[in-house]
Each structure stands twice: as C-alpha cells, then as structure tokens.
Amino acid sequence: MNSNSIVDVVAGVLMVLGALMSLGAAVGLLRFPDLLTRMHAATKPQVLGSLLLLTALGLELRSWALVPLLVVAWIFQLLTVPVSAHMVGRAGYRTKHVDKARLTVDELDDVVARVERADDDA
Amino acid sequence: MTFLDGSVLACGVLLALAALGAVVRMIKGPALLDRVLAADVLLVVLASGLIVNMAVSRNTNNLALVVAITLIGFVGSVTVARFVQDRRRP
Image (cartoon, rainbow over all chains, first blue to last red; front, side, top):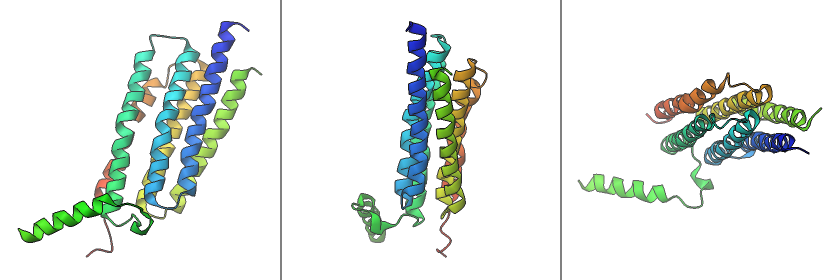
C-alpha cells in the first residue's frame, strides 16, 4: 500500500464521518421535541462536519496552497453558526415558542423578572 | 471500484438522507423558527455536497461558492428570527 492510497483512505473516512454529522443534524431536527433541542441539534454537528469535509478536500487535492482558504471557510462557519443559533433561540424565547414546561433550569426567567421589577420601581 | 469511490457513494446517500430530513422538518413545521432551522441545515448539506463533489473530481471550482455560503448563509435565519412575532399578543 503506497502513501497515495493511504491518503485516499484517510480522506474517504473523513468524508463519510463529515456526512454522518450532517445526517446527525437532520435526525436531531426530526426526532427532538421542541425548538431549543432542535436548535441545538441543527447547529452543533455541522461545524465539526464541515471541518472533516474540508480536511478531506485538502487531502484529496494534495495542496498546501489551499489550506488558508479552507481554514477561512471553516472559521467563517465557526463564527456565523452560533450567531444564527443565538438569534433563533432568542426569538423563540421572546415570542413564547419555547415550551417552558420542558426546561429544567430557566436562568433567563430570573433576569427578566428582575428587570421588570426595576422597571416598575422606576 | 476504489475505496474513495465507495466512500463518495456513502457520502451521497448520507447527505441525501440528511437533506430529506431537513425538507420533512421544513414541511411539518410546526413553527416558523423550526422551518428556518431546517433551511439552515439544508444549506450546510448543500455546501457539504459541493465539497464532496470537489474532492471526487479534484478541482476547486466551487470553493468560492462554499466560502460564500458559510459567510452569508446565516443572514437569512438571523433576519427571519429578528422579525418573527408572536401573533397571540395584541
């Protein structure tokens, strides 16, 4: 087995693992019961999945010159996915899409109550 | 059929199932925010498909598209989440 085919095998394994992450996100979307758990499942595995897929692409093209661009693609994924997850969670909380009976701890509730009391006093 | 061909085939099947799951969630809803999340997942699955395609055909034609998707893909969901409203409230 020469080194060329070893790189191919590693790239293939990484690609399948990355695709499995996408499938995991979709299964989480389908199976989980409410908005916050679905948000969790939809946004977390994709970042690792895209890292694995971009690594596989870099291995398959056998190019060091491509690595900065792949890193940029992944860093942007890492930066933007939490933003959309946060905005969806925030909008869900504020518009009563979140089922509070399912939450074990709701730390935001205390903060909201305190702010409302402060508003009443003022 | 080499190992790489087999893994690309497996990737295609897995990504197709993932896209199908996202579309099912987009149809079923139940709320607007669930559909937005499903659209986000579908976009990342699309980018993953582009990456696999580039890896198997050994070119970088779609790399700019992948970077653009990761850069501005979140704008849609942030916009919808910002303007979603509670209809029950007066």
